Length: 254
Ligand code: ZN
Ligand code: FE
Image (cartoon, rainbow, N blue to C red; front, top):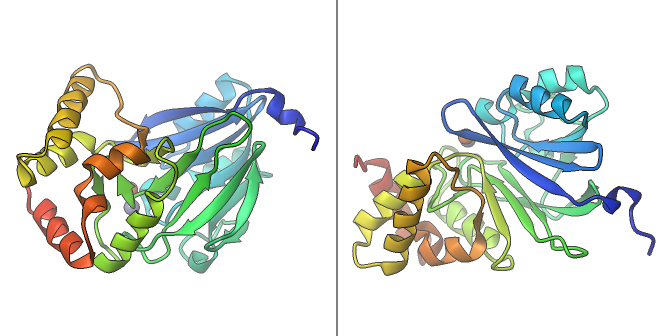
């Protein structure tokens, strides 16, 4: 098989903090770029223009404005860019150009992308998995479903759905990097440590994350292995346990 000409350059991923605690993920290979969940456009356009990149795709995990807000302006700047989103949510993401569903695959910047439907936070939330390929590691873009040390609030789905979604997302290879859309890690782990005070893995991760945040560093990406070890929602046995944990987190003030 001939290598993709674009894959002569390595795939690079970067995080752009925007709004209060959102992250936009930027992917680039050579002169081409893609972006996941652009909450706002201006800093994304500046980042791309500084590097003289052409935006070829926007991936949307769900319809909330802090994930799609920047996309219309990005499309005005790069009208040929594809917008990949849940085909079941066309009304709420009307500018999508490629509606996708569970199990769909497409190629992006020389990598394969697999679509997973992961309901719970919203009814049509999707995630994007890039399996490891040709020496490049696996990546997972999971929006507001799986957070580092936590999970999204249940706005349109059930605890049982969220439980199943988290199990699917953490069934990937342990080294898969987990790119979630918010910096909630420290508060998630503070809550987890209060919920499971004897848990050494959670305590150790909380100590690391506290230092990172004190230095102003980001805590993303996480990994599948870290979430399996320290995320109480991922470790929950079923929807009933997840529902109890979600209630506890919703009312946690600490
Ligand atoms: Zn959301
Ligand atoms: Fe969000």
